[in-house]
Length: 130
Image 1 (spheres, rainbow, N blue to C red):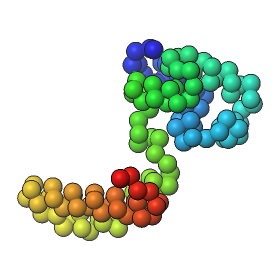
Image 2: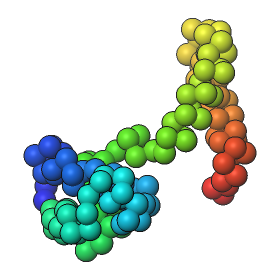
Image 3: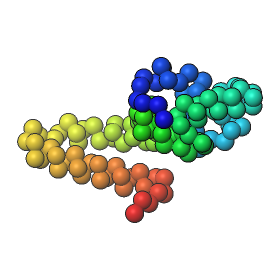
């Protein structure tokens, strides 16, 4: 596997686009349609991408890309999650503004907000991680 390097030096724009699409569990056909590329181009890009990442399939391509810091979780979060996070933060802005400067108090308030966010997220998306 190649050592950690800049994305732009290791992967082409097309390869990076395919890699990010793989993180969303999109099918080959969905990725081809999304990127407006034909099957042959997709397969060629995947072969090159997998070789660069030392991977034999899309699971290991994504796994290795995260390990090589070519991807980060924030950029691979679903738009639905990003939207929900922004809505939640906006709804709590006044509560955040009212947190006093006492660092212990601020830490506990932030902790409570994070727990509340986690619970709201699970309720909204019906995802239970325990």
